[in-house]
Image (cartoon, rainbow, N blue to C red; front, top):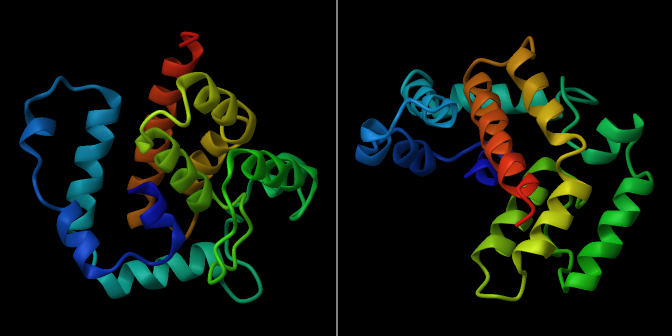
Length: 182
């Protein structure tokens, strides 16, 4: 879901699904992740798809550059296409992931990394927990929480404040899980 919200402006269908009340979320304890999910659901109802698309453009594309640069190399080194991207490409190749022809963003884009983790977690056994943990701790943990925090603080963010809060809480849970040495 995070990948879909960060790869491109979300379509009306995704926003409609996102805004549907979740009985499980309403009945669970008030964890920070649950609170962030409920905030994201409620925030989705406040903005039109066109307003969210405009906000997406301002935040991530802009004229020349958006308010935020959603790439790991940028967050780690201050530059795009640096050593962290080369290391990521190497590791993705070893795991059998290849670039998709129609995708123009580098592999260290926040959406691409969220999608990669989703694929790894959904796979039936090819990527064990230790492999996922190593990938997460090397390519996501060093920078992505900072990105989501910056998203919550971005001047042009309204809808994406809730996306940033959900991302922060989601990564907090992931970091706790992987720190248990699974």
